[in-house]
Image (cartoon, rainbow, N blue to C red; front, side, top):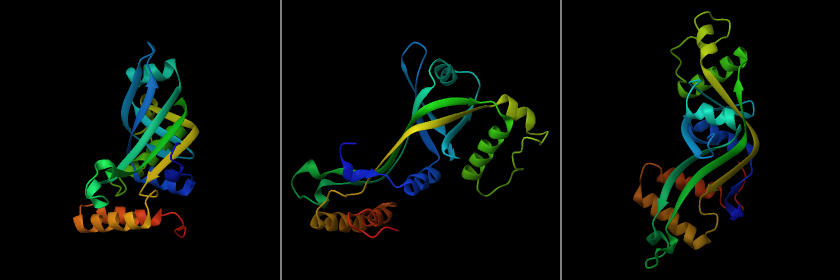
Amino acid sequence: MRRREFEMTDQREIEQFLEESSFGFLSAVRPDGRPSITPLNFVYADGAVYFHGSRAGDKMDAIRSNPHAAFAVAREYAIIPSYFTDPVMACRASAYFKSVLIAGRIEIVEDIAEKAMALEAMMKKLQPEGGYEPIRPDDPRYAPRLKSVAVLKLVPSSITAKFKFGQNLSDKARSAATAGLLERGLPLDRETAGLMERYRPGAPQQ
């Protein structure tokens, strides 16, 4: 990563972001060599990323042809206008965000118990209020569906994360950007201001 001040290496922070996020983009290579990008819901469990879907289609063809893949998750918190910190030049315009890139090898999960674990973890993440019977491999209502659904497991070889929240700013520019966010008051602006302080160089670790 070129800008080391934005690099996030704290595993807890990375995992928390993955737990909060529900959507990402899977990059693979089709059998003819063309790139493939698929938007997917996911869950991060037991150190791996799980997806589910049909057993047929471009995504499965790509994975069977070449199991090496990458998965990107990102969330933009705020656009920072140039005039927050410079009344004339456009160069100060920026965006504050979190992003995680996971590269590794995809396995097609066949074990029914592992499928049930992954899908139950996904349900708890996407439907935390409940309202369904837990997914168990020994439940005869779920057993045939577990056999027919495709569950994919991305085993990471590397995980890199970039959390950009003004770590490169001077104290004066940071104060100006924070004030601009609080005055503007968009839905994520106050949270963004808090993250700017949280990730400020030298700030106490939480």
